[in-house]
Image (tube, rainbow, N blue to C red; front, side):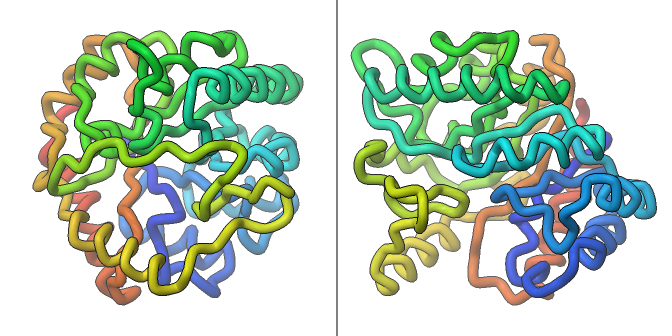
Length: 291
């Protein structure tokens, strides 16, 4: 697998407190070809031209960034300046067909504004989008009701498999809408979990509460338990629920441009452990997976 990018969220504590340039230097040293910013945060750099110079200095690409619905538009001029293509909603609560239709309308609206900057708006799935309303997955309702001229989808294959769906079939079915792939490993199928309503969003990085001001933080003990569960289900690249060689073949045969991004879920690893894991991931995906 060539030209593997890294979602900067994956740096975790290894990137916390460091400048954008310091984070880019870490990514370059690990061997990744580019980065994906997250949370609408381009780090310590706010000027697009300055960020472009830093990316060029470390010979790193950036084709996409993750945003919440309320900060995505602020990211358009920066992504345009650095030569990006996709402004992606990292996640957004919706629990049924009506809310999926409402979210589709928002994505179409943002997508039209993004087009003025030469960009497309995207949506990145987790597991909960694979709850059903009738015969359709919630994610399918979103895909079917967004304009392909303005809205693309970033398929998180790991989350999809974690939800228990046939990720290979789903990717083939919607190959015309999928423009980027997230690589993530889980060691078991858990199911989609509870889909959250727009009326009562829960905490997730990059997602604002209904008042648009502050995310709803869960009880610290609940959060600790949730993160420990995630840590136990996280595993090294090549040891999870997705056959990445077969999936890369599916992507190629479906005619999807192979834009792969590694994202290792949060865990309680030390910063040193996190870097070691990301290096191991890079070695596996670039040496063992043929795209």
